Length: 573
Image 1 (spheres, helix red, strand yellow):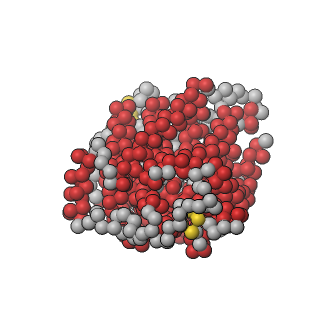
Image 2 (image 1 turned 60 degrees about the horizontal axis):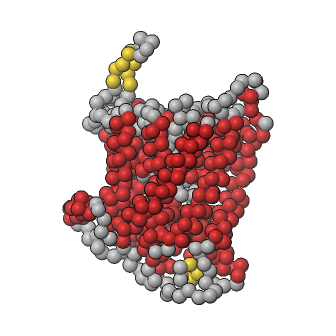
Image 3 (image 1 turned 180 degrees about the vertical axis):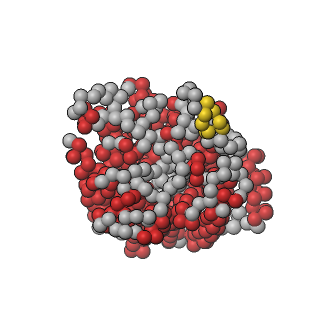
């Protein structure tokens, strides 16, 4: 057990240490400074801009950024939808996997476009290799979209008074080529040399030790899994995700995949400090996020290490903790760490089954996604936190009787209204979706087209845990996470369409809001700091931000958590 703790602490510290130089590099990329990779990527990027007719030096305002962002994502959605809808008749399908139904194709296309990768299918049987490759492409561009949006906010925070906020296409292409691609390639090479398949051949026939002939799925998995974690996407090439021995063969690959999903969210916070030349501010932000992360991960570890009290009452020893749904080759401690890392960061990949974790752990996983502001996904983690900064500055200004200011710009009613709407939107989508599903299940409603049978049929567990399964699905969708309590039968029109709508709204509105706020603030007159200016690079301000996050999360979600995982926790006691 001590060795397991040492492994977790080592991965966490190494990720922080490496995130600082990676953050400096990202800041240089967005500032247009010279880097070591210029000689490699300048010709590639110039070629992309030339054939697409894009002027990468043309400055855009925040509305032009949004127009470019939304237009590109709409094109990717329709392309992906049609590939999945007709994949059974398209090339690169050696295993003869069928085309997706329209509702499943709709859900999957949206899910990968919005960086969620909520999967209502199993990769081995649900996708052709062409489908997997197109989804791998989306894992690059969806992560690049979030990073480009964050870069625009960086520029808006840096400039004193302007509506020229860089070029979206420039930020987007550089995010994909200079950041995501090299890091994903490193992870993919490690995985390939560790035993993860990287081939376009179909299933392999093997003979088991029992003498049975079985077919084993394979494919171009190593490349897919590299960007799956670097881009905080989380979609599994195989149905069991990173609990599958091909996706995650060894303790080394487990450590590498954990590092991979941590590195860019960490680095983006440090990049902010280098970009603005306000490193102390970035340390305060990172400190708040880290405190929130530790307050989630420590209870989860304790819960899983102590085991299941119901099994303990039977007199069965649990020396290694609650091992149901976990891989023996990893152990309880690092699996617990992964559970919170993947929900805090919105990766959504799993190396154990979340549905099998203890109720307290399930509550922490849900809370990580409900807060959705500690580290977060590529780029969008900062956008979510930016909303809470605006609210914290506004509340602090009211408390001291001054007009709220942030980085020399007055925060007025318009910005606060946008921030409040975005903060309220997240719980609204989660709780409204859960209420609708719970109503149908509680009344055992005949669903007709929406589900073949009555609504209770999509629940494999009754009572509190069944409620948690439905709550988790909408929480994962709204947080663009993609993990699930997999006791839920979700591959049907009701869940595919309802979560698809939540996915769309919860991805683009929380991007539109921060970009609008940043653009509006950038266009305002700059006010030099004075003795009465609220300092945002202090511990006191960090505490204020944390308090705002905690109060909003507690008021919004405690009743739902009390009905689900917390009620289940007390029934076990």
